[in-house]
Structures are given as structure tokens and as C-alpha cells.
Image (tube, rainbow, N blue to C red; front, side, top):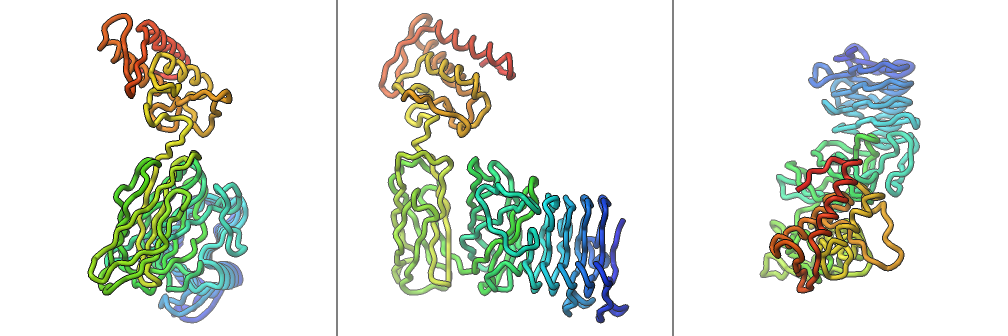
Length: 481
């Protein structure tokens, strides 16, 4: 069913209220795959002055689309003609697509722009919509005002109460925008982050113009940082907000806003390195039109990883300044550590650089000698057998799911550092042993790792290969190298 090109709740000339006593459009009690509006201006519905929601999707309705409509306006798409509740409400219904094909504009409604109500209203995709000047939030999950984020999105509710992103900074060169931010949500999950320009008021009520999106994936702790550059022109008096959408939850409420500033160029001498780096050089360059000496404030989003001075000064006669950021080499394992280094000049300019690290304290990978599983300084058939024995309980599992030995022995079984325990980890050790065996000839050979000599017998290598293949045949397909 298609509902397109109508005036709903308005007089014939589209300029006077003639509202229905209930919703303007209702999709109720299970309909699937209906279309309200369309992708062209002629298909748009103008829906206003109704005494309930402008559009109401309710009671088990699935996969319905609402695109390109003007909800809360007169026909000129300027004069306010708000509905008495929310512009659009989704209640006890799932998998709606609101604005996916063409953005809706929702304004001047007495409650939220879009409300997602009831725990069974999940997987609703709210995309690209222009939402402003409503009395409630632009997007309101549970229709109860702002919903706080929770650790790893463990809670449930409308759209699974999807956590919203945290924006760190937004800056412009005039034709491009750089936005830095982060998200904590479900682990190992892909998200679409959408960015919007607001009226300039730093709140969660306005999201006027869609700017673009980026795709990110959380790590095994549910975290992801990003710096994205969009081809868009935004006035520096405006602010930026964002939403997060996943295929397993739906769309979040809007983030808090960050003010748009001019760009400071921030770069690091390395973008990824080990925890033992010591220091990393960071350069901050002045923005266009910035003259004289410039005092720059600095911040690290995780000072337990990287520490920066509180401020630096770009000299009047220099285009930039370079300083050392200190990388903290501690004894605590932090999987996938990363930080954002932000430089700002009051409320005038900002820039951000990302630095990710490999933590040298991993209990599962030997950074000094990756195939030395036992950590004794040499590589022998024992190292392969240690991995093979662990495969009984750990095949394909993440290292975060495993427990290290309690007797003080080492078990660096993740020899390729992919954070999984698989037959490949054992084969990498066996390949080293076979290579040395061929170099030394049949029988006994001598292998050296980091100047430490170890002796092994080729028979043990064959035994390790046989044992690995025997176990693999029972559960996985393994190609013997």
C-alpha cells in the first residue's frame, strides 16, 4: 500500500488546521511493507494539526517505510502546524525504516520528533531525517526523555536502548568537516554513525541537516574511536550531533552536541606502535587566518595510555609546534588500547589525532619471539604441543575467554597475535621447526632464536604434525602445509 502526495489534517489549500481527532496516518495490527511518502517531492505527504501522532506505527506492524514527508507543517513546509503528540511514533512494532530512502522533516510537534515506544519496538532504522523545534527530543527511545548510556549496552527496551555516540570535536576547513568521537556498545558489532548539523544550540533537540555517515566496528570490549572526514560545508556557528545504528538493535537517540570550530592540523609521528615506544612526536599546525602566537590546550582521551602537556604555544613566526607525548609502559594488559589527542584554541579551533597501541603485556602473545610459546627463550616441539593441547578446549575461542595457567608457567599460545587460538598458531611453530630441520639435515638439528640455542629431534616435529592433524580431522578442515 502506498500513501503518497496527500494533505492530512490540513485544509484544501494546505494552510489551515483541519486535524483528525486521532493520528494523521495509522499502520496498525500487523501490516507488512507499506510505504508512506516516497523519494520525490510529489510523493511527499504533508501531515499536520492532528490530535494524536502525525504517523503512528503500532501493534506488530513490520518493515514499513516512511520517507520524504513533512510532518508538523503547512503546505508551504515553513508555517508550523504541529501534531498534538509526536511527529512519528513506533509502538510495539519493529524493523521500520524512517527516512532510509528520503529524509523526513519533522518539526513543531508537541512531543518528540520521533518516539520509539515499548520493549518490542526494536530494529527500527531512523536515518537522515531533519528533526527540529519539537517540544521533546529529536529521537526519544521509551518516550521518557533523555536515556543515559550504559556499559556495553547491556540494557534492553525500545531499539534495545541503543547507546548514542560521544563526540569529541568537530572542525572545518570550509569544504570538509573532521569529526572525532567514540562509542561504547555491543562488542564486535558494526555500526553506522550518522552526523547532523544543528541550529547551533548545544542540546539533543535539533538535528536539522544530514551531513553524512561512517561505518565503525567495536572491539571485544565494545569500544571504538574514530576520526572521520566528510565532504560538507558547515558554518562555524553551528553544532554537530550524531546517532548510532546497528543491525541488531536499531538507531539510538542523538548524542550531545559539539560546537563547530576551525581546523587545527594535528599529526603524530606514528599512528600505531607498541607500548614500549616511550615518546611519540605530535605536531599542531595553525589554521588558516590564525596569526600571532597561539596558545593551544591539549588533551588525551585516555591519560593512562598516553600523556600530553596541558598546553603548548605556536610561536608567532612558526606555522606549527611539535611536542612529545609520553606513552605509558605499564604492567597491566589492555586489549586494543587507543587514545585521541585533541588540540584546541579556546572556542575558535580544534583538531584531533588518533594513536593506537599494541600492549606488550598480553599474556597470550610473545612479542619478543612469537613462536616461543613457553617463554623459555627457545623454540622446540614442546611449543607446538602446548598449543595443540590447548586446542582441546580453546579451538576458535577468543583469548578473552580463556584462563592463563595458575602455576606460573607461560602459555603464549596466540603465536600470530590475532586474539584467537586456532590450528594456525601451532602450524606456525611447526613451520619454524621444519625449516630449521631442513636446514640442518635429517636427524638432530640446531635452531637459534634471539641468540638462544635449542636442540630438537625431527621425530618430535613429525609427532606434533601428526597429533595436530589427528585432532583437526575430528572438528576442522585443515590443509597440511
